[in-house]
Length: 594
Ligand SMILES: Nc1ncnc2c1ncn2[C@@H]1O[C@H](COP(=O)(O)OP(=O)(O)OP(=O)(O)O)[C@@H](O)[C@H]1O
Ligand SMILES: [Mg+2]
Image (tube, rainbow, N blue to C red; front, side, top):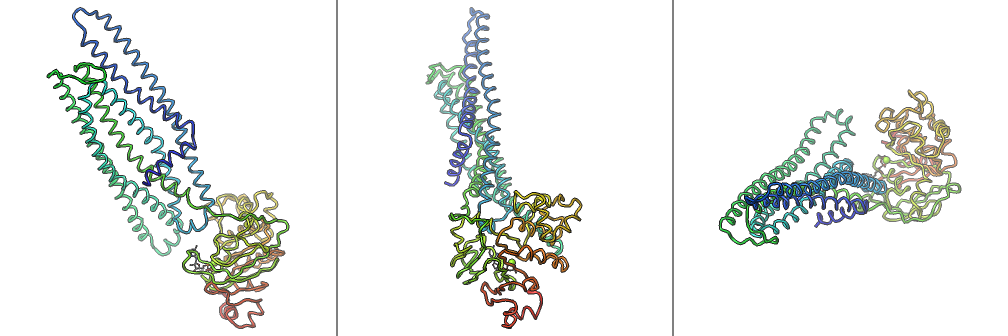
């Protein structure tokens, strides 16, 4: 059922992408394969010419007639060859174009998926859809489908010509075909399951390899190389076993069918011989009597017939893995995109930047509640600090403001408008975010800063870096602002990466800023410097800071202490110190919260 729907969806998609070229390509396939079979009729005619020649026939006449037939034959071959060549070109264009079309569709959809999707899927498995599954589909579209069609058409044409020659011999062939069909169904059906599993296991393996690449340092420091090799071997073995089974079955199918084909050949020859000897009546469309000139081309066709059934069965594998790949690709394309029903657009110039939470409850998985009844008001220009132990829910609160996730209960307002009613892109353009894990791209430092505002000039980028105190270290880099960051900033220190991320947020000039642990990896001296830059940056903006170091949150207008997803204390530094509660304990006990 799934396979069928994948097939019809696939055909529909190719038609969508190439409404003209694909049908032309298929027409060429059909006509060329039909033309390729016709010579059998001519072979019969040439043999009959010689067979019927009597002692008084003129050899010149026979030669002329034979030559005429051969010229027509050559003409047909040339037409078929040209058609095949032209189709080779069109087929490459259709196949590669279609894969490009699918990749774009996948990537477009991926860019619009909610974060929830990435939380629940291994990244390597998503990757493998772009590589492995697309490749399986390439095999299927470029070879599987055309060859299947060729074989299918050839079989029909051969069958028609067989009926033209002899009904009895056709029946013999059909019995053989029935046997072949049964065998294919039995062996092919089993390997189909293995091929599907093979595709899925490849995705898992790629996911694992990717995770291990990212975790190299952790693996090394915990000396877990052997464990990860063992885990890899386990996954690799699973993949191997499924692929082995799939291919073993697929590989036995060909030889079995070949042998059935050979037996069929012998049986047909015997049957033909018997029919000639007994002089039985030959029922056929051509009304030709049974003779050598009928049996020889017929045997030729029996061979072609068996060969085509064999090819058909071989293409079955590419079709099965292609369809499995198509299923996984369509699953990505069909994933529910991030909904955006909001219509209201924030005016960047006149936005004030007030943020309010009213009775907000939140859970990542709709089961365990992470935030309980959060109420807060951040007035324009105010600095709000979120403190609390690790896992308390600080980052989660920050995630809700840009609507990375939607709340289960309660409301969040931006300038008095429920953020559900705001266009997401507009909301996000008016928020600056510096995340706990900075994400830099493989590009120059300058371009990484410009990412915050694509039309910013070079000098604007440098200004922003100066403002947050990043300029000093950037100018000391080998190529300054043009230094290329490899592997998402692997050639920088964590603190340096954060400074670039802060510059990036600064250049976007949003009225609301969210800084999640933004200064945690910066040394004390740099921190003071960054703090000055940040203070300048924060002026006139609504700011949320999440920091483990209480020194960075002390001067906040409002400090919220979060524990287990609840706000347990709120007030200014001095108010909270007076309260002598949790904040006081944290501040006087250990300077660091965690
Ligand atoms: N993407 C996610 N999917 C499911 N649960 C999550 C996800 N992110 C965080 N959580 C859970 O939500 C809770 C709060 O996490 P959160 O990241 O908000 O803590 P935090 O206060 O920022 O901690 P830290 O100070 O360590 O950064 C944790 O129990 C965590 O397990
Ligand atoms: Mg956090």
